[in-house]
Length: 234
Image (cartoon, rainbow, N blue to C red; front, side, top):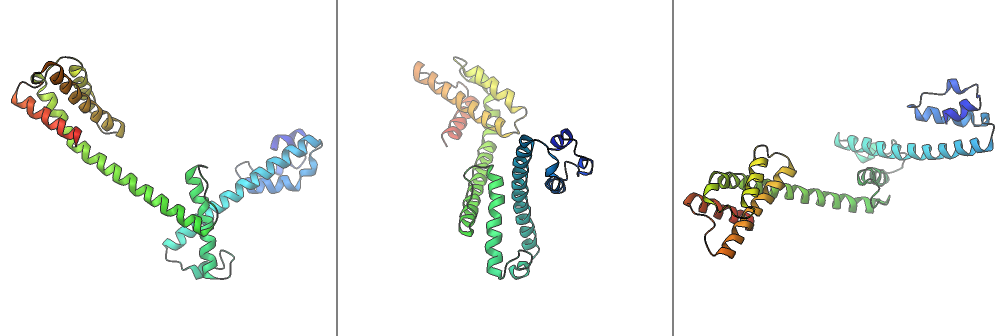
């Protein structure tokens, strides 16, 4: 929009606030809308201003909701927020805050299934978000517990690999375990370690099934194989 006004040789464009000062810039453009000479430029600039005012309104809701959150966390009562939220009662302040909270929830969802701006819809969305967060925590905790079991099992398989049948893909999967085990810290690496241990167990079982002979030939290898099979099936 600045360029439109520069192209129109608007003498006031030099007084327009910097681009990062969006509110002031929009007020300036509104006051000087008549400087644009062509209908096309006026239409283009007006639509852009409508879009940017909508953006500011959305951002205002988002940041006001965060301010209310901070106020409540600091012990501010709903009654004390009545004048700040331009309402008449504490219950109205609560309801307005819940409607504002929809802005935060919608920002977090990145436009996926937007939350309606009603207290009831926001409360429901907050409960769903809390339930989803709890489910993620449980899944992460379960994954961490499984990983804690997998690491010594994977190490044991490598320590006793000479006692494991080396037909088929067993050596390949053991090599994959060795590669990832040296630095297994990221979620992706942890998942990969589990996948490789499962693959070793699957290949050893396949060998036993097709050859009718034990896939482990030493006591250490048998214990490592049994421990891996237990972790995989558990």
